[in-house]
Image (cartoon, rainbow, N blue to C red; front, side):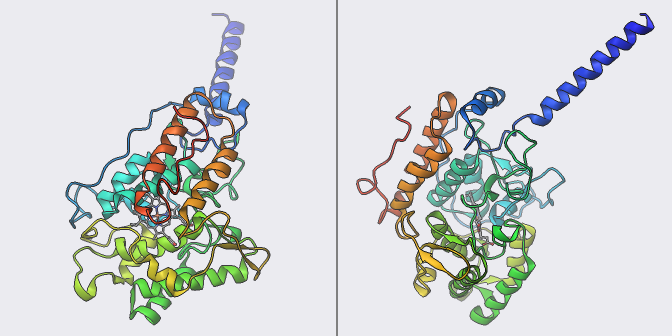
Length: 391
Ligand code: HEM
């Protein structure tokens, strides 16, 4: 080969390599939400994704008692450089112990199974959480969802640029304000463990729970975190789904982080060393046994009754305005209508093909998973809405 020809073919190969690297770095992440993309973007991106029909959600556990879950098949391993963790200490723990894929990217069905296996989370609430998160934050074509990472606010633009992983950390969807151990998004980091907030968790557990975190502490700390956000965060938001989750999550820690072998007066009393292990490290305390029956939101009525804050949001600091238009802890049907008719329609105004098919399947799974909220949310009181027709 002549020297000139060699140099031309080398340049050609080099250009090809650069082009393939550029394509790779622009590839749309398989776990990133497609919500809000233009029709042109969807047309370009969807054919590059590995489309999957979402499987039916897993049913309840066969054996639903307590058992050792910090076992030799599920050793703790701290997340590696490419692994994603986020605002949920439960999911972080499940990923760090291999109940979920250790990279932090999973299907909703895997999340339900893992939450049941690793914490004895009740089947129905696990469905609601997993499908709500997936519809708001997951990739409906690939059926994958990230359990956290950076938010859109702290990274570069995920649309078209190499994307930061938003996943369930995306503020204003599932993730919200006044978390117990994570800061409000307004202050810059809504997903990492916050030591100052955990110090307050400890202080409240000492003051109201005799050194343990329980329903009484949950009630006082819930109220305190809301008051703090009202007083400091001009964008504080406790409307709709956040009203529901903000109260629910406070008792998750009592019901699912307490060792399932505790009975009698010890039941429902989370010791602070275990609390730190879950919230900070995403790690089971040594020899941890999961809850001794399927559980999730038990006791939330105690927390709500102690300080029944209505749903609402701040219009400037210290100016909390009630707003029931997006539903609440006690009015899930209004949330459902808002979720479908406004939130979903804004994210996906006109889906077609595989996206429309998978959206409809996930909307079905979500709707069918909530009969346990019968009081406020059940047919015929709250009939299913089909915003995209039926498959
Ligand atoms: C089944 C799927 C689940 C999903 C999709 C999910 C999602 C989330 C999300 C998005 C948050 C952040 C909300 C916020 O801004 O505070 C959160 C918080 C939380 N989750 Fe989960 N979660 C799941 C299961 C679990 C399980 C099994 C547990 C306990 C064993 C758990 C315990 C908690 C707690 C205690 C918080 C509050 C953290 C805080 O306030 O600092 N979650 N979860």
